[in-house]
Length: 328
Image (cartoon, rainbow, N blue to C red; front, top):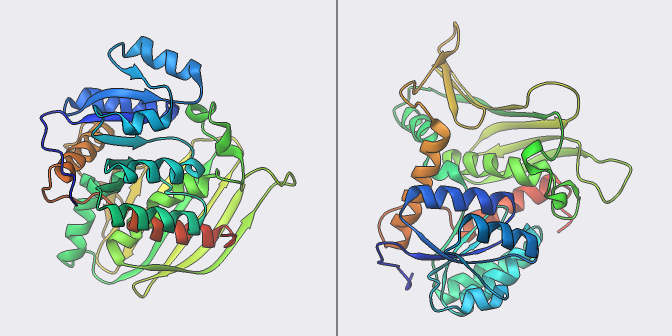
């Protein structure tokens, strides 16, 4: 890449000031290694709220103005996925580094064009999959390498949400719509990335997705069988009912099995009962945010990093859209 940013605090411009934009604003501010100078969202109220909370941030007149602003080193894209294509191509055209939320997009052809654009422009391009540098995942990876797990006999993902979107996402209506939302794109993408990181390329063997009668609304239940590096992978999830959310990813081994639950908590078993791992992590969620942004700084400065590229995210998107019916 030809646009390494060697600044004490690289200047970041935010496109999209919804739930994820606000979360990243808070995390980058707490991290201290970034200077957030510009922001834009088509919702002017969202812009005003950011301006009140972060008075030093300049609200740009448009996304194009933000991308072309000479003060901006990095374009962070946190808008709904169907809009990523236009903003990424704008940034690539003016040789800006790009940090994009997942999924990369919802149309395979459009996302392929994004990959070609950033690779042709030789700009740094990364997608926000936090499992790229997560202590629980790094721990699992080391146990796989050391043969502590033994032979992997299967991998499971089990999801259940009492409502979709979740309470903290209720302002993002697009998440309820089949066109670009749904929990398969929003949540399962993370775990497709994870199995491809751990075990290699993945293909969908079989999938079934249930949708509401309203053709505009996203899925309510899904089952998928996948094959990854010769291993059987089973994904299942649904929405509805009363109870806590369930997010469990389990690697079943002949020596030791590991379960990643509630996103960033880890437990293991060698046949009797589950035991907690990484007890020293007092706040694994915040540790994950810090590691993610440290990892991104390494990428910006041309150092070794594990941030996933647009090409990696396209591989994930291809699996996700195949599960949903291969409409792209």
